[in-house]
Image (tube, rainbow, N blue to C red):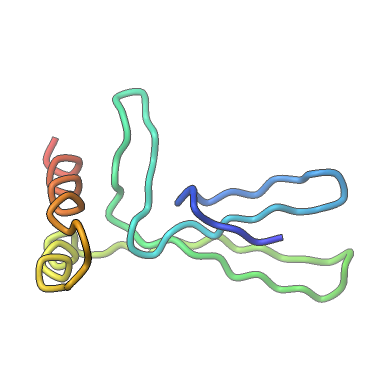
Length: 94
């Protein structure tokens, strides 16, 4: 089973089922002791299924330019973009 929403890469076994979250391309999220952060990378997973008994999951991260990411938000019609921009600025300038 592949899901999302938590914005964190994850692999868990639940009974006989693998639960996979590939991460987030545009809004990765980490919780550290100091609080939540927005890392400057895109996350995804490559899943290869050869058989029910042979599954390969390769979690990947690709760095990106936070300033360019913020400019793209600012130029978009995304609702509440000012909140996202503030969050990215606050969490990447600490």
